[in-house]
Image 1 (tube, one colour):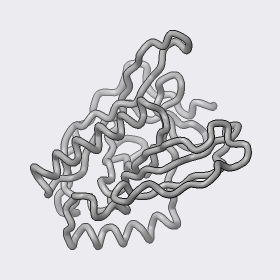
Image 2 (cartoon, rainbow, N blue to C red):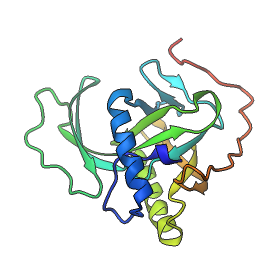
Image 3 (cartoon, one colour):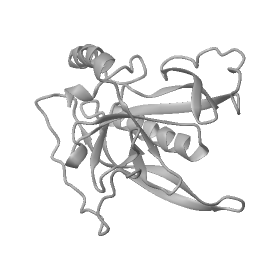
Length: 213
């Protein structure tokens, strides 16, 4: 699991020599490979990338414990006009006036990085960021559980999760879907200790990919 590390230091997580080496290795790799963007669409489906490819049902994802970030983003007509994000181990960045055309000014945003560990997308690295109440709550809840896990067992700080959803009924907008990160187990970051991944059965309807097709 060593390659699931990016940048998240001095935030109460185990500071081990093996993690430092892994961090440096992935920092160099991520500069060239980049990450796909993961999100939940308005219909409650998890999708990633420019083609809105739907995430495979039952696939397992490893959450990078060093990748949690917070900050601000400014949107304008579906386009990101500005984004300032830092590790949650640091104070939120200082912002000035929002970019011209930003429909809502600067919005609070938090996020994290994940890597697919099973199925068709195994090896895919993605970033999930959210400004919504439900999305931010999902990341915050996961971060709280991570902190509790590190307090109990620093040798297994990597959450292996299923990407799920829940919903509520809004009086004006109808059914609103929100992300759920269901932890299936905790894993080590030691490359010699790989988790045994138990795959969830696929949904009866199968997988739709890509959604735009």
